[in-house]
Length: 118
Image 1 (tube, one colour):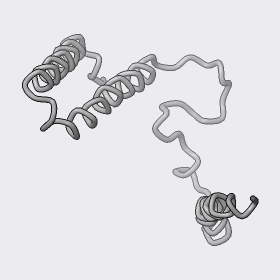
Image 2 (cartoon, rainbow, N blue to C red):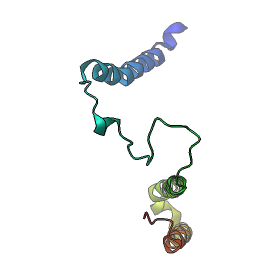
Image 3 (cartoon, rainbow, N blue to C red):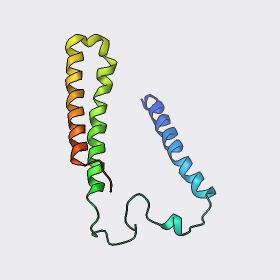
Image 4 (tube, helix red, strand yellow):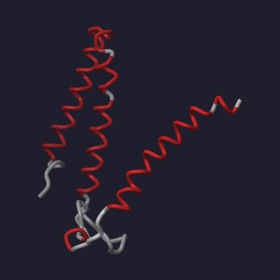
């Protein structure tokens, strides 16, 4: 009975090796020469080694939330596109209503200035 699980264990083992091998190789071979540019804040807008409760701009949250919303909404388009030829006019119109609502939300956020970074 254990031989039935051998392909699964082999698949998991190969996955773990392929997942860990690049990290181990880069940790062994990568140069370690930190300088001021490498230790500076990167994409977060504030120094990385400060108090975790320090205030920072709410726009970081807003951009992240908007990205997640639009990303999830576009994920709904993939099944619709795959089944597009079988849906008929009703499916086409339902997709157009969805895309219209998505466009209205995008225009609203654009007009409110949620996508502006000053």
